[in-house]
Image 1: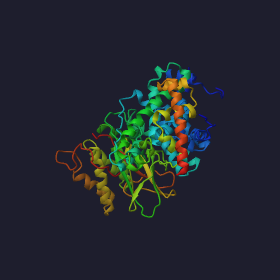
Image 2 (image 1 turned 90 degrees about the vertical axis):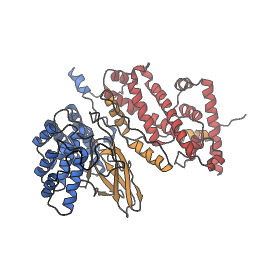
Image 3 (image 1 turned 180 degrees about the vertical axis):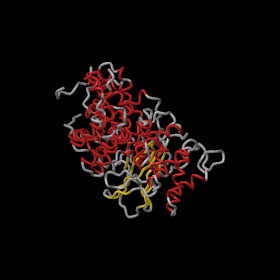
Image 4 (image 1 turned 120 degrees about the horizontal axis):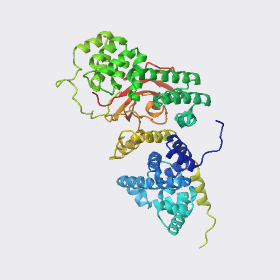
Length: 185
Length: 204
Length: 167
């Protein structure tokens, strides 16, 4: 059989899955779990919820693989599924947490107290990220951490490019502000 | 065509990232065993779990491979006795029963007298033997109860026998006494209400 | 408005780009769910909704522990919730390890009150070998459960069985 060191492309793997090779999907999962997992963890702020969202997204993507119009861009298509799934988790978690927002956090003026106490990490960066409005965090992560282009992000999120640029700008400003506040505590 | 078929005997185990906990030689040996088990329709998950158990317990690669190989063989024996429609939990429980001393004939007989799933009946058989009940007494007891007893009844029977043994009764005697009181066959008046799930989480 | 090179934000970006550990079992769970896609309707085990703060934490952990197993082909199978308990007043940590969590000590740390360590797990039908790992080094079987007699690795283990609905 010979040893072929060249990894098959996404398009090739998708083709194989569609031809019935379920195992090929495992290769896609391996390929994307790290990046998508990173996005989910930062977006949702909770490791277990993020892994659940990630697992759901992979399964959902498999089930609707016929609807992936451009298999060469499987990754971007998969991101879209994950981004939407993370929004659902965020909304559910926000409703749950609203019951537990304590007054102290409200007094501190945390922009999104329901997100702040989700994180048990004391890392200032994670806290600052959590304080961003979800749509700012989403845009910031997709642009600066996941390195997607604005037109790709626009496709995933449904927002216009200029709106996205504004969200990223606001995110940057707010992160700076929150981190400076944290330094002065 | 054959090549394609070979490729399609999907390398299920080889792609399982959990096996990365094993050293490379052990990993490939375990993956090969798991994949060939998968190839003949045996469940892979029990094999993976046995390897992971060995890894966590710091067992040598050779020991892990031996355990995994033995399990794959025993799963095959279990399947021969129970038939190809047996589920993975049934097969695992059947392996335990076989290792406890039940014969394949006992397993086949159980399959004939009890509606699936057989998991609990097989487990109870194995667990009785683990408590010290002779294998043939345990088998006889489970076969006697199997046609009518619910899973919960079988568990209660096992617990009752274990209590008696703990209090000093000879295991074989404890089994037959409990069996003969007839408290574990279902009828309208039997203890343990039918069908209602436990309100609290139960202990093993 | 003058905007200097934003070192603070760059620091954030570099931090966030670092790889994040994702549970190694995730891939297998995905593949199992997918493999089940064509088999009889799989039940989605309900996530328990959070009532009080303590229940919220427990629910999050239990939710993470629900693993879809492609085993039971009969539609009558149901998950059961089991309470695992070990009395170990001197222990600093106790982990529940077994076939239900890939024998990974990090997955099911037990909670303690007054020296009694406990953990509830929701398990699909099956027969599970397990043990307690005390202080990360000492293996103990569950004194309240049947012993796993086929112990090939030299340490004690126990067995728990979850049946389907009985006949």
